[in-house]
Amino acid sequence: MIYTYIPNGVCSKKMIIDIEDDIIKDVKIEGGCAGNTVGVSKLAKGMNVREVIKRLKGIPCGLKKTSCPDQLAIALEQYLKNK
Image (cartoon, rainbow, N blue to C red; front, side):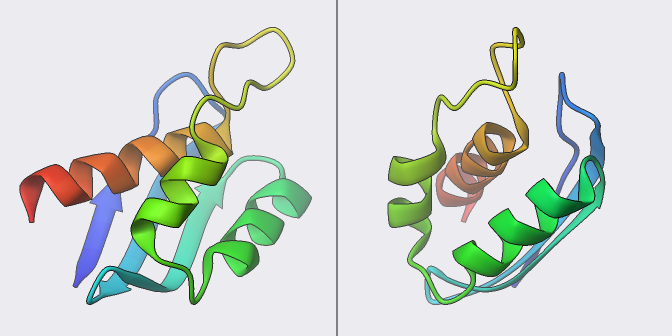
């Protein structure tokens, strides 16, 4: 299943997540800091959705209360809620 999420409060503009049986197959993050978003995307591949949420939820970016990793966790929470 392809799940698309529009992040809030961060530089990235869109997250496209490919999930199969609650395992992340691929993550593409449009916009944001390339090193950060590519790194987070590669680390999340092959992981269970709940584990990614547990690891990334609540990470801030500088003085912001959210970050691209936190927004990915929020996207995955919404996926679980809506599946």
